[in-house]
Image 1 (cartoon, rainbow, N blue to C red):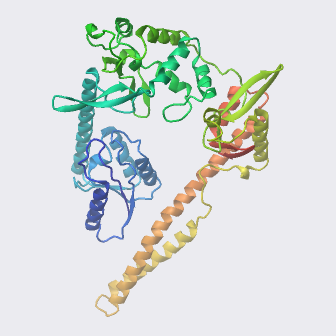
Image 2 (image 1 turned 135 degrees about the vertical axis):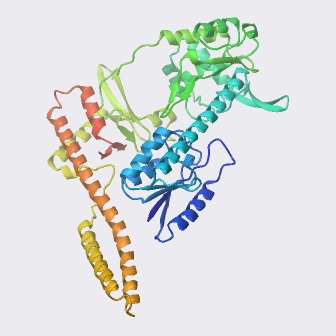
Image 3 (image 1 turned 120 degrees about the vertical axis):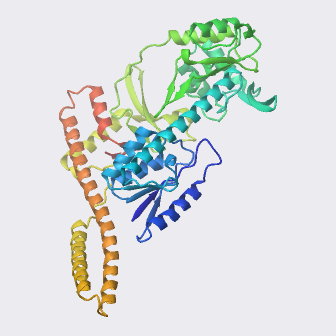
Length: 516
């Protein structure tokens, strides 16, 4: 019997049971309730610190894949809320367990899912786990909002050029932002550049050309620059700032507090969703007043925001070049981007490593490579595949070794032998030969258990082989379609089709490693 153990330590409390304790409790409990079985444990213990509010957890995803691949017989947890705190997701998870014949056991609750009342109790406990999570999350959010409204720093990475200090208020210590005098020069310089007419892209290039890096030692990217010059933390708390944020629907403190003596703090700019972090509009922001000195005057800060707003426009790809744009990566792991420029009335297009361009050759020593060289190399590989589909390399390699028929035959023989021995035992129960027959039955039963486990793995290999064959056929058809219609398809259609079939494409010098 293969038992999957899923432990998880609470993200909210330090006093919850450790992962090691949960694993040991599950193993001990399994030894009691499955004492007649040969147990094999598989532990999924990489989710420590992950919240139970959703299923986007590495070990949980691995566990569900093994359930769907029929590797597990039982899934065991120390407590129900370790695996799920959402009724809808728990219901979907348990349906998957049932479809694949996987039992579910919770050590602490000890419910029996084979009975209607046991399943009902399980869903009730899942509902209470979700209620507890939502209440905890709401309390944490309310507390953070109250701190933010009071001008206190709620944690996380400090804004560039700032640091945090502890101040005792009453009986409690709270964090507040203050200016880091050794680093704030960089922020003032960025605002001076944008006010003097530089675009964000030109500022990025200016910083690179002058060796100006972030506090972490990396070159400043356009997104980092944008985040800095739009952050209210650097803005003076002058009356003009109050009117600006009021007009944009922000939640604000009393207008009389805007005396121009301090900087601001914003809260609610981002919201963590189920799958990604969302950027919120200004009407969701809460603006409070910090204790730090202002970095940029309210007038200048507002002028920067107005200029950025005026520059907003729909962006289109300037040059439709590079079949592998958005698909290819560098050997260092960074994305490959393209650049097109004109020299002496001749147009040139190059692929290059984004990391090399931003951070220098100390991080990646790759070169600029002409787009047509790499695109022709890619098309040459597609033509080679068209002649022989066996050249298609799938990203998820599938084992070719499958002895399914041999295992089925051996299992059939073992089952027949067990039947014969059982019949012999019935006829010789009072004979001295009975103990030898029982020993043979026990030995064959062990063989049967091992063969059944081997059979499950062999069946999985067969299913994966069939899936791989279907995938290869689909990739081959798409490649043939691209080559047959290459001259009539638009650039966008070619690029989208390549994105769909190519899983990885790595550029190493002037060679490509492609998987589908």
